Image 1: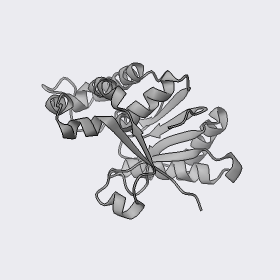
Image 2: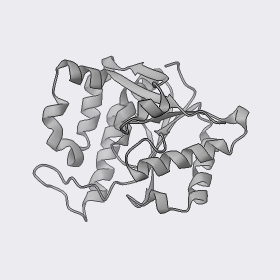
Image 3: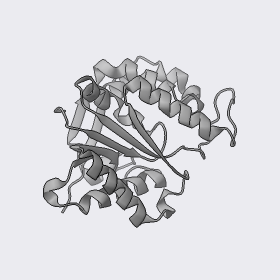
Image 4: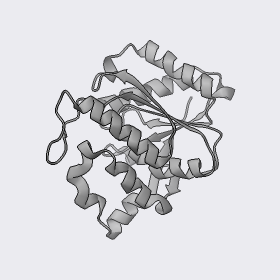
Length: 217
């Protein structure tokens, strides 16, 4: 992936950034500024650590700390937590959220935005977040629009969307990806065996990041 001017990440939950850790880390190494807007604190997450060290009351602050630590490990210095309620993004005032995203785009003038592909990202918050980003960029003049790179992983997404048009070799950042993911202890501690696995399938999982460019009409 070519060097960018500024990267904006807009995702709904702490740990959603793990799908682009290597790509972003490579850009940061090249001196590219990165801003991460996280819409919620993931306070409705099911996992509480293994053994449990969080509860429904403490989970929001724990996940905030985990996100800050993960971003520190990746190198993302500008992290903005907007405080929307987890699992409710689809019910938020859509126009207000779109305007807020547009304000950030106008402030930062990013060359690329990372988000989820609406309709192909499994979780309603993922889809609603991606749709809001798409609407925000669609409302801009064509010549001013940043490129929108989307993560998709719903079953059948490749049949519907075709092959991803951006595949980044991030094998040199595989260890960093694991390290950053492990910062989200409350959510992924139970996956320690998977995170440390070193077979061919695991190497493929950690060495490539795939994105679809959203095509505006």
